[in-house]
Length: 248
Length: 300
Image (cartoon, rainbow over all chains, first blue to last red; front, side, top):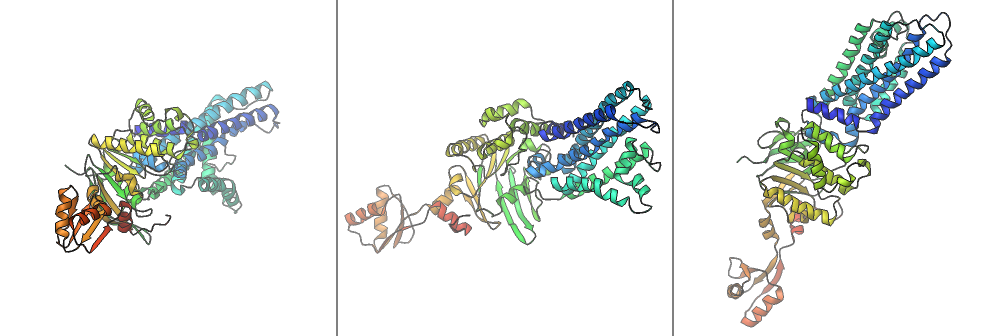
């Protein structure tokens, strides 16, 4: 397993696409954090501007999802799944290696994004004499939450990638769900708190500590909900791949 | 000794299409077996089943007696070159090999050694998207050799190679077989393997249509002159005496090899022999191949 994992981590490090997704999303976090912290206007009703601005780092979760999708779907797109399976013929082992590599990459992305965001936002707000309303334990909880959420989103991406194998389809499907379907579903009366608690984005926000609703779950149960989604997607992907012919 | 590769009663159905139909053959260690058939005959499907990538409808395909997925150390047992790109265009050739090396516990030093062997060292750090077909093939060959495997499976390895490359590949496969490795090499061009293979398996429409040492197939295809007539037996003796290869059992007709029609004619005239027929028979290897596979001579 460690060999297969080493190979997957190596593959992640050796394409421009994965660096582009990771560094690009971090760049976005840096830029938005700088603009918001330097130019943001905070009303006195805002009791924790620091916490609010750290939500910015949560945008890497979606990039982690895309990264997870790419880890599997790229292999099918370019046919590298064939040499990969020749080296690691056990498909469950290959998918597990991809899962762990993606968890690691997603966690790293979430961790770095949160840490960078905190390092930009909190000192800048203080320098503008705006009370951040955010103490060290809040910051640590936000960092831990975003790290876990990005890791689990990457895991969901691995499952989706294995399930659909089509890179573009999987990415469009995932983003469509997050930006279109879930927001539309919230319009159904009485459905909103179901989504806030039990749907992937709701759970991810709650896990990251950035949910704006009092209906949201606490961090740990929200993390469990998201982990169950990841497990379901990965299991489904594995089930589909297990006896699928790899012909190209 | 257990066969290096054993395909037994292999059948694969894709929906309505029968891609492989009750195919059986074996490859012994130290042998090069040419796996021949026109495009679409089921060669690639067979090889992919052998490598655990495609699941058979029925039958088995094993390497050293075990299914590929059940091998303890697949990369050190079997090396495979399958056709197609199968490279991430954004990853360098060296990193492609390194990722496979890491997955199978092979050192980076071995990667460099193989890049040297396939003459790709200079291009190894460029992104693979810019590689020519020949470079991709050579990289594929390097990947197959990573684990120094005992069995090699190559699907149309000559595709994209220039004549020098094909010659190099031929010599290389021979040296691998000489080291006791088993080599199964597919091709839709008989001439490509005719100088390399010890034996051939010819398939058409997923079925085996011939399986023989190459010499036997060559003998069937060797051509020659058929001479018939009342004095055929005497002519045979005369030709044999001067070193021609003469066969044919009946006393009214013989088959002569290694002599042109004119040369035979001179012997006939010189000996005052009466014949009723003198005609070239047999055909080239290619014709035998076409005849066996039922392939048309047109573009495929």
